[in-house]
Amino acid sequence: MYRFLLTPRWWGINVFVLLAIPFCIFMGSWQLGRFEDRVDTHREAEREPGPEQQEAAPLEELLPVDKETSGRPATASGRYGEQFVVPQRELDGKRGSYVLTLLKTDSGRVLPVVRGWMPEGGRAPAAPAGEVTVTGALQASESTGTDGVHSAGGLPSGQLGMISAASLVNLVPDDVYDAWVTLSKADSGLTAVPAAAPENSGLDLKAFQNLGYTGEWFVFAGFVLFMWFRLVRREAEAARDRALGLEPETV
Image 1 (tube, rainbow, N blue to C red):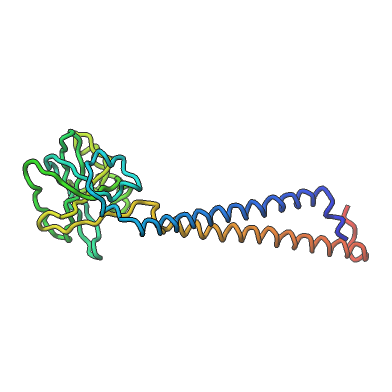
Image 2 (tube, rainbow, N blue to C red):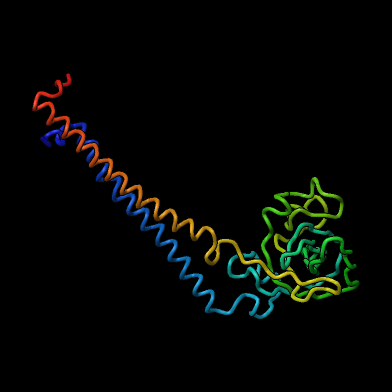
């Protein structure tokens, strides 16, 4: 009854099943390993001192911004220049704006500095005059900003959709750092903006995506096996019916 399993057609089906099931199990185990690695990384990060608890270091020593340096206190000296408002930023559940001032550093490059947050309708205070030294949490340039705006286009003059060198390249003549800092202690009249966690760190959405993919791959493996058994059963029933003369032989 099961001689059909040795036909060329079923050899192809059997080989596919024998390859597909281990592949699905391998991919599911790999995704599970990715999730476990993220859990371990998250636990280690909780045991270690946070970036904000480390000693401040000169800006140049912490660049480029990565998972290790994101959130680290950075120091830079220079003079404040042009100022912008970054609207539609929430803090403690309230809507407001970041006050971002460009610091012309001693190196000649410009560093975006978020001096603090103000509620909607607030008036941004003027930046301190003269030579200043700032200390704040280092952050990577944003890829998207206010309502997904990627540039200054579409916003009123003096406003930015996101904080990045890309959004400032056409607004200032100087070279802009591909990073920014948020002051540890906000200037008078403003509220300090906490540093954001770096992307792909801790138990973020991608970690649980790995867990979801794990389940999907194991479901695929089960589905392949289920369909194989179903095809075998249907073929065996057809062979039995032909043997009993209940179904004409197919040519």
